[in-house]
Amino acid sequence: MAGLDEPQANRIVAGWDNHFPNFAHPGQLAPAGDWQVWLVMGGRGFGKTRAGAEWVRSIAEGDMLARIALVGATLGEARSVMVEGESGLIAISPQENRPSFEPSLHRLRWPNGAQAFLYSAAEPESLRGPQHSHAWCDEIGKWPAAHERSTRCWDNLLLGLRLGKDQRIVATTTPRNTPLVRRIFGSEGTVVTGGATRANSANLPTTFIAAMEREFGGSTLGRQELGGELIEEIEGALWSRELLERCRESPPTLQGRGTGGGDCAVAHDSPHPNPSPEGEGLWKRLIVAVDPPASSNGDACGIVVAALGQDGIARVLADASVENASPERWAKAVANAAAVWGADRVVAEANQGGAMVASVLRATDVALPLRLVHATRGKAARAEPVAALYEAGKVRHCGMFAALEDQLCGLMAGGSYEGPGRSPDRADALVWALTELMLGQKARPRISSF
Image 1: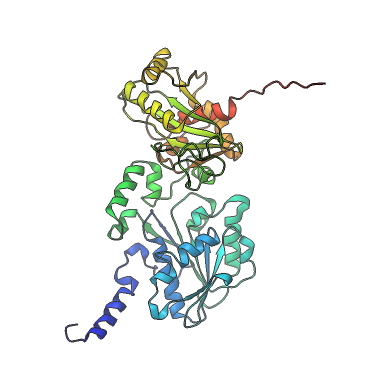
Image 2: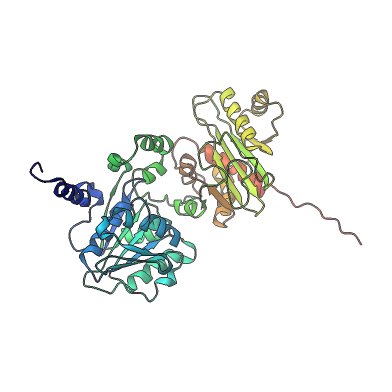
C-alpha cells in the first residue's frame, strides 16, 4: 500500500469495503453445498437484511441472466427495506455497479442486465405466472396468515422458480412459530443459519442492545426476538405465539388515551407518561385491571391497561405490572396508570385481601373509580372465554408485551399453568380487563313507543 499512489490505494480500500465476506459474521454468509433454501433466522439486529441483500447482489453481479424475486410482507416493505433501506440493495452496491430502480414497474436493473422484481406476500396471485431463477423472501414470519396467504405465496413462488440451472431462495426472518416458518425450517432442502442479536454487536449501538435486553431479557419472547430461537408451542395452551402474532397491531402514531379506532397506545410494557389529548372520546371504555399479590416478596402485582374502541375491538395498551412490590408501591403504580391513561374504571381482584385491597388503593387516590371483583373459578377457567375472543379477532395487542405473553402461552386448557414464574399474575389482570370490557356487559332493556 505504501508504494501505491492515492487513486490506486483508494481503489483497493473501496474493493475491500465492498467485499462483504471481509467483515460479515459467520451467520451472514451463504452456506456451502447443494441447498434449495437458505433460512437466515436471527434475533433483532442480527444483520439478516444485509445478508439477504448481499446474497442477491452476488447473484446479480455474477449472472447477467438472473431474474430474482424480492418478496416482502407488503410492497411498501419490499421497497423501503429490501431495496432502499440502509442495508438494502441500492445502499450496499458500489457506485459503478449500482442497480437502477424503476418504482412504477417494481423492478431493479443491474448494469450487466440482471433484474429483480418486487412482490407482496399479501398478494400471492401476483406470483402466479412470473418465472425466476432466484428469490429473496424477507421477514417470512410476519407474512399475512389470513386465508393462507403466506403459504399460497410461497407455493406460487416455488412453482415459478424454473429459470437458470441453480434455482435457490434465501429467506430472512426473526423466528416466529408460524406454519410457513415451521414448514421451511423442517424441509429437506433447507439449510439454517442464524443466532442472537449479540452476534452483530460490532455493528449495533450498545444502548440498543442494553435496552432490548432490559425490555425482553429473561423472557421466552426474548429468546425468540433476541436469541433467535424458534420457540415451540406448549401443546394444550389457551394462547399460542401464532395467535398472538395474528392479533398484534403496528406501533401507534398517537400516544395515550386519544388513540382510538385503528391506532393504539404506546407499545411499551409500561404506560407512557405524557398521553395525548387528541382524539379524546374515541374509546368507549378504558380499564386498568389489577391482580394484587398475596405478599410483597412473592408474586408480581399484575396491572394491565386495556380499552374498547368504537369499532368493537378491545386493545391491550400497556403492561404496568410491578415485581416484589409493597402494598404502597403497587397501589401507587395502579393509581399512576389510571391517571396517565384516564381510566373509566379500575378493576381489582379482591379474593386475597378483600377490603384491604380497596383501602390500600383508596389510600393512594381516594377518587379512584374502583370496582372489586371476586373469582369463583380458577385462573385458567376464567381465561378460556377471553382466549376465544382472541380466536374470534376481537382483541389486539398494541405492541409487544414479553412477560405478559409468556404467561398467556402457559395457561393450559385443563386448568394448570406451565409458564414462567409461580403464578400468571399479569395474564390474570388481562383476563379481568377483557372480561370487564367484552364479557361483563349485560343487555339493556329497550323501550318502544307506540
